Amino acid sequence: MVFKTYKKMGLINVKSINYYPITYVALLILTTTLLLLPMCAPPAETQVETTPSLTEAELKKRDRDCAIAMSNGSEYYKNRDFVSAVRNYRRAVDLGCGEEYASELYLWFGRAYNEIGNTDSAVWAFQQGLRYLPEDKDLLENIAYSVGRLGDTERQTYYYERLIEVDPKNTEAFGTLADLLREQERHDDLIQVLTQWLEADPTNGRVQSELIAAYDVAGKDPLSFMRRRWEDSPDNVQWGIDYAQKLIENLDYAQAYRTLESIIQRSPSAREAYQLTANTALDEGDIDRAILAFEQLFALNRTDFRTAQELSRALLRNGDYPRALEWAETAVRTSNSGGEALYIRAEVYYTAADDCVASRDNGLSNFQDKLVFNMAYDDYRSATENGYRRARTRADFLEKNLIPSKGDWFLQPADLRVFKPQGNCYSWITRSVRRS
Image 1 (cartoon, rainbow, N blue to C red):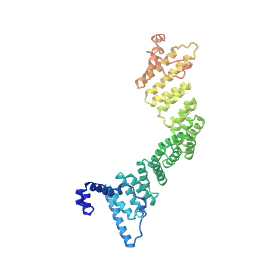
Image 2 (cartoon, one colour):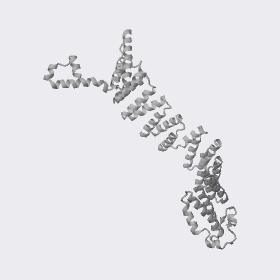
Image 3 (cartoon, rainbow, N blue to C red):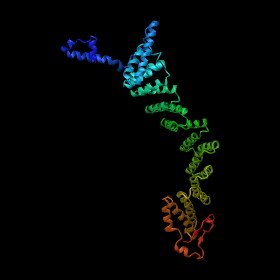
Image 4 (spheres, rainbow, N blue to C red):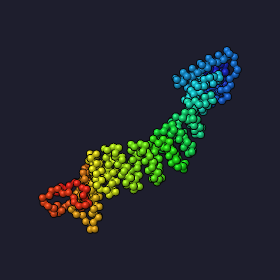
C-alpha cells in the first residue's frame, strides 16, 4: 500500500527500482519511519502555543475543523482505534484548539497514547492539559498513573500529593501515596499523609494502625497523637481504647486506668473498656479491680457466661471460694452446662479442698476433704464428657488418689446414703455426695 501511494504521488521512479533495489528499500523504510514517528515520540511542548493570527473566516474554519477532529477522535476512541484517535487529537492540537477543548482533549489524548503503549507521549498530553486545568482530578490521576508506569517514583509521588490537595477525600490516592512514601522511607511525610487520611476517613482501622506504626518506625512516640486524637473526640470509644492500650504497653497503668474510667463515664455500655480494665488488672495482679470490672461487664449482659467464668477464676485467685462458687454456678447455668464452666466449678472445689488440707499441720486429707474432692471429680468428668478434654487428667488423678475409697465408705454409718461435707472449711458448700 505504501508503494502504490508513493508511485501515485510521483515520489518513486519505477524504472529506477529495477536498477537500485537497495535504494528503494532504504527509501521505503525511511519514509515509513517518518510517517510513524509523530505517533511514537512525545510532541514538542511549543506546538500547543503556536497559533498564528487568523482572520475571522479562518477562525470559523479552524473551529469547524477542531470540532470535526475532536468528534472523530472521540468516535475512534470508542471503537478502540486508538492510533486514529491519537491522529485526530494531534490535529486538534496542531490547529490551536488546545485551550478551548482542554477539558476534553488532553485527558483522552493521553489515554489513547497509553492504550498504544506510548507512555512518554501520554505524560506529555496530560501535562499540557494541566497547564490549562491545574486542578483537574482526572488529569492528575492519569498522569500519576502514567509516570508510575515509567518507574518515576518521585514524580508519581508529586502528582499524588497534588491530587490529594485537590481531592482530600480520595482514599485510593491516599493509599497509593502512603505506599510510595513508605517505599521511599519518607517517614515524616508518611505521618503527615496518614494523619490527613484519617481526617478524611476517621473510622479506618487500617490507617490508625499504619499511623501508629509510622510513628514507631520514625522513632517517635505516638502517645501524644493518640491522646490528642481521643481528647478531641472523647465520644470515640475506640480511640480511647487505643490510647489506653498504648499506655498499658508503656507500663503506665495509672494513666491507663484513668483513661478507661473516663471512657466508662462517658459511655457506660462500652464493653471494651470494662474488658481491658479487667484483663490489665489481672495481669498486674490487682485482683480486686479486675473483679469489679468483670462484675460491671456482666451487668451489661447477664447471659454472658464467659464473663461469669472469668469472674469465678478471679475470685478463686483471691481465695474467695464462696463467691467463686456462686459465679461458677452462674457460668454453668448460663452456658447450659458448658464444658469449660463445669471445669471451673470443679477447680473451685478442688482448690478449696486442697487449701484446707494444706492448712493442717499433718497435711493429710480426711473424709470431709475427700467428699469435696469427689465433687470436683464429678465435675471434671462431666466437663470431659461435654468436650473440655483437658479435664480428663484431673479426673484420673482424683479417682486414683483423693476421692473416698471403698474403705472410707465402709467406715461411715450404714444408714446414711448422702453426705454433706462438715467443718469450717466447707461451711459454704450446700452440695452433697451420694454413697457409691
